[in-house]
Every structure is written in C-alpha cells, then in structure tokens.
Length: 465
Ligand code: GLU
Image 1 (cartoon, protein in one colour):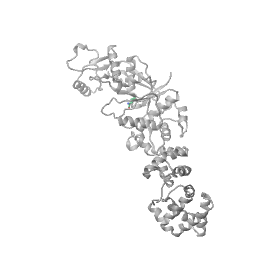
Image 2: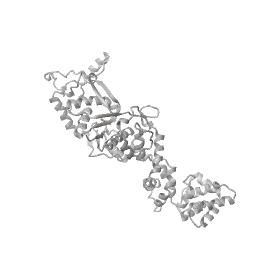
Image 3: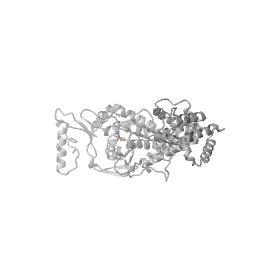
Image 4: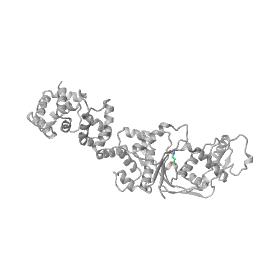
C-alpha cells in the first residue's frame, strides 16, 4: 500500500505553529514512505473562511519547504459529492431523516440536563415512520450509528482508545438546507482522496470514533489514525499568541530560517536518540509516526532561536547574502550600492557567528552597505570626538600600509597604541566608531580589509569633519 497523507487546515486564520507541525509530520511520513502528501483546504465555514487565509497557508507551507503533491482540494467545492453520499446512506437505510425543530432539540437537551443525563440526540426519528413527518420542516439526514458495542481506535500515537458506541449519538450528515456537516465532508474527502493515514491534532480523537462509524456505514476502509498531542506554552498552558503561537509569516519576519523551524517543530514531540540537530534529509530517513510522544510538548522560543543560530552558521555564505539583501534594501530604503554585494559576501564568515537571526545578520551586514555620509550613533559620535588627534594619526599610518590586509592593519594600529602607551582598544574603539558609525561591528580589521583602502580612508576623513 502506498502511503497518502494530507494536511487539512481550515482557512480561518494564518498557518499557526501547531498546524505547521501537523503539516510537517504528514509531509515527513509521506516522504519517508515514498508516498504522497496532499493538501485540502477545509473552507466549508463560509463565514469564517477567507481567501487571505488560504494564501497565508499556501505561502507558509511553501516557505517551510513542505511541498504538496497534486492540486489542493477545496472542500466546499465538493459539497455536492458529500450530499450525494448522505443520500446514498439514506437509500441504504444507514441514515434517516430527522424532523426535529431547533426548539425541540433545545427542549430535549434541557430535559437531559435536568435529569442529569448526558446531552445527546436521543434518536427519536431513527425508527419513526416518515409518514409521521410534520409539514413544512426540511429534515436533516442523520447517520444510523451503532448503539451497542464499542469502537476502538488503534491510534499510532495514543494506542488503543475505546469508545462505547452508546456515547456517540446519531450525528447529522446533511443539514436541512442540504449542506454537509464537517464530519461528513472530512470522511468523504479522505476516502475519495485515498488517504491512508490521518495524522492530526489529538483534539480530533473523538471525531475519529464517529468518523470510523461513518466509514463503516459507507462500506469504506477506515484509514490509520495518529493523533498528535497539542503544543503547550512553556508554562504548560494551551499555546496562545502570548506564547508565540504565531503564523508562519511571523517566524519568517523574525528572521528564522525554514530549516531551523522544521528542525524545531520536528523535535516538538518526536525524537531520535539524543539528537537535537536533525537535518530534513535525516528526518525523512528516520521519521516514524509511532515514535511521537503522547504527552503535550512545550514551545520554547529560546530553543528555537538557538537552533536558528546554528542553522545560520551552517548556511552557505552566498545563500545568506541573498537572504539578507532584501532586508538591507528595506532598511536602506534603496537598492544596495553596486560594490556592497561583494563585500557582504566576503564579510559573511565574520558576520554569521554573531547573529542568531536574519534580521541581526542584515543589521550587522549594513557596515558593508552604508554609503557616505555615514550616520553615527550617539556613542560612536562621542568616541570619535574624544579620540581627537589619535584618529588623524591612525589614518596616516593606515594610509601608509603597504598591504591592505587585516593583519597588517592591526599591526599598524597596535604600533600606534604601543607608542602612545595605550591599550589597543583605546585606538581601535574610536576607529571602529569612525569607520562603521557604530560601537558594535564584526572584527574591525576584517571589516576594514573588506571595505578597502579607499572607502576606509574616506570614512575616516569624513569622521574627522
Ligand atoms: N480542518 C480541521 C482543523 O483545521 C482538521 C480536520 C482533520 O484534520 O481531520 O482542525
């Protein structure tokens, strides 16, 4: 059997972190087995579904590198097919018309509540003759669910979970207006799409029992289930925005690399020995849904950022240079100067160990992109002013160095400091301020080498004014 999984988000909001992890697990499972990973947009809630959310889901998945096979299925467009299945079940006697009005259902629930009974539909139309149907009521179609026995979900994560059938009432499949319910749509779509493994949040576990009954009523194979625990915040409470339950685009805006987020999400609930750094290739090779833990996992932003710093260091310089270029252009409000690209690339080995996200990296790289006149921050300005004649002397020495290389430049500045009985920093700090406009930068002499003789001397002249 070839594996087919799916990710089935409701487009009522962005692709949040829990959804992204569900998508990742489905993707990994399919890729591991050489199967297919399908996408279904569950847009049946017409009030709350938006095109913007659909786009955000596509963009988020694409950014995360989770490519799906085939055209995405838009669930609402299949409503006719869903209704057809409900009518087939009706014809086969596996479903029935129920004429209860909303008022009648409300009364039923009141009575059950008053009697301390569980609130569920009591099946009053299950065996009633349709000739008793009241006039003017558009009936719903309900499934004739089994009332005795149990339904066991052999869940790949939760183990065997048993539901007494008496607990599961005859759910509505088709509403009075002919629209399908969520439960019906999911089952028909999963069947028609040939889904072999349903991997989703464990908030759907009870649905799995009802859906199993529906598969059986239809005479269809029940897919394998894996219900993964939800993600909690570091404080153990259900993950919320406050904890960082943001959309994928928010993580992109934070300067997180997709590979880092994939690795992080993978480790939320799944592990391979003590490995913390797991490349996507390794994950595809090793992933096994049965190894997902049963307990909820906790979202930890610090851990995500430290993984991100790791992936940043591992990413080839040219790739990083290409990633920071648009961020830098945004900060500059202009295209990068012509000679900046080469400098940024050469500076990358010195820049990337100092950044934990792309925004920090872009900020660091600005030293190679700023055009004269440089802006000076206040601290830099003060250091330049304080240094006075020292900077002019340094300029003279630097201008005279035969070879414009970091070691020769450092030797020249060191020589000056020694001659003045000063620590290196006393000269290097104002020099850094004058050359970069800031008191923080990658190693100064490396920056100077990359900026080149002409640019550095011009910056020093400018600072002197
Ligand atoms: N659309 C559902 C949700 O976003 C998922 C349904 C499913 O995976 O079966 O929670």
